[in-house]
Image 1: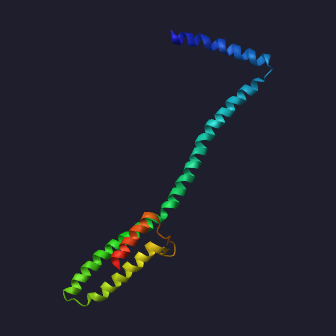
Image 2 (image 1 turned 60 degrees about the vertical axis):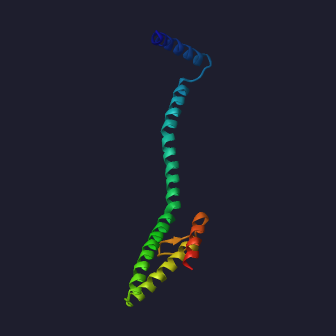
Length: 147
């Protein structure tokens, strides 16, 4: 029943709108122009949304670039701490030739710790900013244990 009422009202509303347009002397092209504007708007909205999302994604990637470098150096710290432990045990067991490797591992650990804390250049393309916030607090704890 509702569908039948809807079908009956469509022609009635169409005639009312057409009479109103004629009475107000509005050009029928304007009616089409509004539809054209709506179509253009519907096509522009996804494009603009895509551009905004692309800019936001690029900003996020730029913001997290240093995170990967920081995680890489942190992983290197973990590897160096394990290497220092095994080299210390070897030196204590009497293998004095491992003492040079132990000193190299200690120097690498200290320099990496300074880069994590104060920032610095890792390679030609990568520069790490100084640590801040909670990360700096945790690095200071490591420094206290290391000293």
